[in-house]
Length: 468
Ligand code: GLY
Ligand code: MN
Ligand code: MN
Image (cartoon, rainbow, N blue to C red):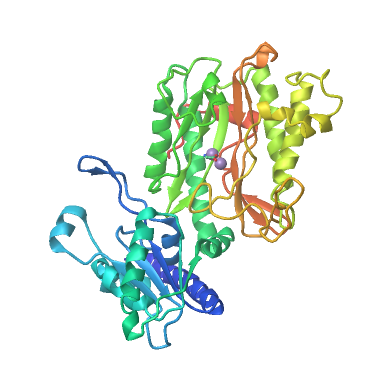
């Protein structure tokens, strides 16, 4: 290990330990108990081939540990002398490591990741009843997994079996996730640093896609350019299924990169981004295959771009989560009226278009979602303490510095008899990632251009793609 990676890993140990300490303090405040956080299960794809393993995000948030078959236990009822943060993980195994690679083993993991104690995962079923005995409460992701619920039932049954000798089982089971979701919603400096790097890699990948795209290519060839840059720059995987949609395919919101051949005059919508060190990025760009927008494409593009600028301007600490969406919708709805895509004879005013949600036929998703370890990250969008309004919904929550979200307006204009033909089959989305700050937001994905002229210039100058 060189000294900078050493410094980083030391820092990371402290980051994960301090998150565990926060959870333990909150559980003690709530009367104690034991929290159990398993990582994800390995899933078989087909005979002898697994899906690539991806750790559970909650588990990773509290451990930084990426091996499968591991569980974190936080014992908030432990006496000061007893371990509070306990990892269960795979034992070292020379034979298995020959086939599958390095494993930390309990002692190695305890030292490297700063747990108070660590045991082989095989001992979970014997240790858990011991940890739960005489403990007042059990905190876990209640009802999220039938298999895990069954395991918990087994541990509780083992504790209850000791009632004759006076051992008490927990009398409360409490959902742990709301507390973790609230913590995850505000990113710390360690997370933001990784998210900025993920954003940069994804932006470079989009630049490469713009520079290499030519009419005649298949969508999957453009996908390959993106995946190449993710891996070449050290990202572990795409953060979600890559969308490369040529022409009318862009009007299908979750269209996966397919076999369609890109034609002269098509727009290409790419929604693709990497996951780096457990954190997602999420970028969409839409650009002309041949390097020049047609006038109809440019009109719609500039409406979506203006909507994105309006949403970005509306994103800052202290405003409602809905404020960027409202700002985007106003611009999009006005654009739909101005172009005649929404019939001006049917709606007296812009406010009528918005009130009657006439824009939803062309803009059917929201402008933002939380972004973090998961691309659609954890955390409530509504204020759980607010009263229900007359439509049975609670108020949107208020943005705070350190929250991270996407800003991604779009317009999707399917061909139809009542739609002006020049706009038929145009699908455009522009998506960037934002960190909320006290007086605005920081966009972490703008190393790929967003203005139409700049996109055209990048494509024009693309004799050889960036060395990326
Ligand atoms: N790429 C998923 C999304 O934009 O929400
Ligand atoms: Mn998104
Ligand atoms: Mn996206």
